[in-house]
Every structure is written in structure tokens, then in C-alpha cells.
Length: 269
Image (cartoon, rainbow, N blue to C red; front, top):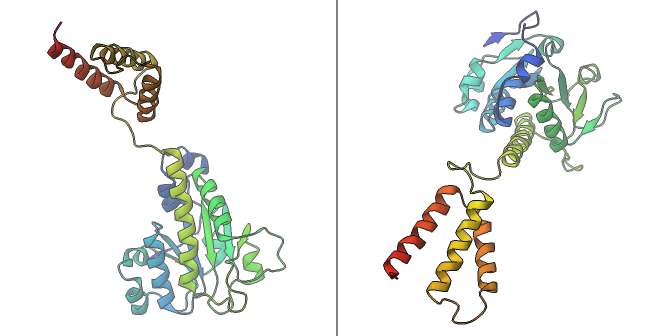
């Protein structure tokens, strides 16, 4: 457990943006979950567990009723490290002093002039900001009353979970889990977009190398009378398309041409 610092840190958003990291690492490093005036210590532990399952690790507690507490440890169920490293303070403003953008969660629309977003929209915006080097917070209020209007006003956007209007009651840890899940899914989707194919160890074949293979294959098929007097055009076109889909690398082209060359030697003159 650490006390919140009273003065801003010396690092800057520009410095952090220069660090190379994946979307999931950026979230873990630059996004904090802030629990405000939590009344039940078990919800703190369960929230820490929800965070850890989604790869988040920075937990900030503002004016909790009871912390540390054995119930929080019990509900953390393997996420005790997050509780040990949690930052604890008495004022929301202090918890957000070095944050560039904060999302406040709420169960209903308020008279606060900030954007109201769905969890998926908020996750996409949070990810965009942490990848730009910004520090971002997601703030959750007291279990019974949520965030007060003046607390929500400290945030730049509000997040509303579209629960069943006939029974919109969500446990605090459940709400934390939903937001953390959306954050992780946004990060994983971006990682897959950045690298949709497995990395190659060998460079891809050039057009010239590929065409050399195709010419070699055409000669070989003629030599073994594969076409039986029919036009080779259709067969070679199908083979070309098949090999193009494979996106051969240089080594693979050499292997295939080696097979053709060895077969030609076995055929003799």
C-alpha cells in the first residue's frame, strides 16, 4: 500500500509516448482504476481480482471505509499484489492530479456537461490516449450512491453500462470487470490489427524469384508430359494462384526448385 504523492511526478506524456509498448502493456502502465469511498472491503478485493484477470494492475483507493482488511485479501483470490501496491488517498482530486483524462462511471445521466459513452466507446478512447502517452483513469463511486455530481465533474467523460432498465443494479466489482474486459478486448483487437500474420523468419520471395519458380515448374511439367497434349494454360494459372496464396518466402522457393531439379536429374536425359 502506498500513499498518493502530493506533488506531480517529473515524467511527461511526451517522455512516456516515446516508450515502445504494445496496447496491453500501455494499458497496464498508464491506466489506473480509482475506487472512491468504497464501503465494503470485499468489493476492493474482488475489483483487484477483476483487474488482474484483464491485465490491469494499478489500483487507487480514495477514502475507503476499511483498508487494509482481511475481507479484501480473501476476495482478491490471487490478486493480493494489487492490494499491496494500491495507492491510498483521501481526495479524488489528488488521485487524478497527474491524469490527462478521466472517465467517471455512472448508472444514470446527470446534469454534468460531459460526453456520456458506452463501455466499448470509452475503452477505445482510453486506449487511444494511453497509446499516445497519456495517463488515464476510470473512476468508480460508492456502492450505494455512486459518484456525486461534483466528483463526476472532475472527469472528462462519463461511462454508462447499458444494464436492464428494470433492474440496473450492478455490484461494484461487476462494473469494474465489465470496463476492464472492454479495455482488454480493445487492446487485443488493436494488436491483431497491427500484426495479423505470424512474423516470418525468412524474407518473402521477390516477384523475380516467384516467376523463376513458375518458369521452372512449367518446363518440368512439359518434360514429364503432365498435360498430355492439352493446353497448359489453365493448370499453370491454378498452380500460380495456389502458390500466390501461400506467400512463399525465399527459402521455400529454393526448396521447391531444389525438388524440381533433383527430379529432373533422376529423369536423366
